[in-house]
Amino acid sequence: MPLESLPAFVRNTTILSDEDRFKLASVDKLPEEEAVDAVRSLPEIRDLLQAFIGDESTRNTHLQLKAKSYLDQNDPIMAWKVLLL
Image 1 (cartoon, rainbow, N blue to C red):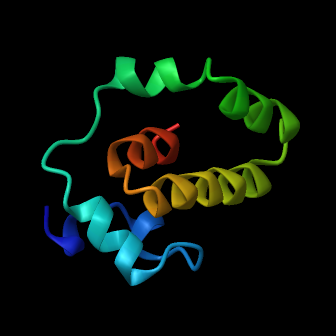
Image 2: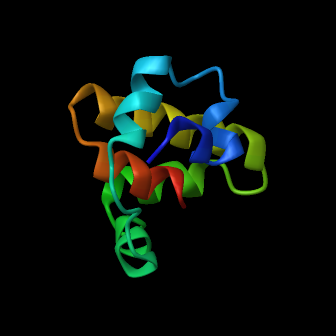
């Protein structure tokens, strides 16, 4: 997918580097909604989501940091699943 077609929150974040964006853009198809929902049950994701209930901005920041950690492990599919929560 072209970089220009990445969602605005991915294009405009200061947390993800250009290299991270290229990794995300390398994915041909975004994960299905069911796959994204399944990530919610992973302990580290569940804890992250529960820790920031009511503080969407901080929650989004931590989700982006978690996605970045998956990108650092060369797992753009998992990064997308986290970003799409």
